[in-house]
Image (tube, rainbow, N blue to C red):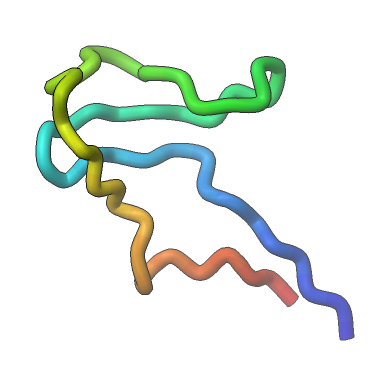
Length: 55
């Protein structure tokens, strides 16, 4: 049985609304639109409802 881990491709801060998308070329997160609050300690919407495992 093989399991594939699929990381998230986008995330949103639940505090300031900042949207980010994964950039494969840069191997990192990039701001999608507005930066939100630059002083925010971001709380991303990646939680127990996101299932990174695929069988």
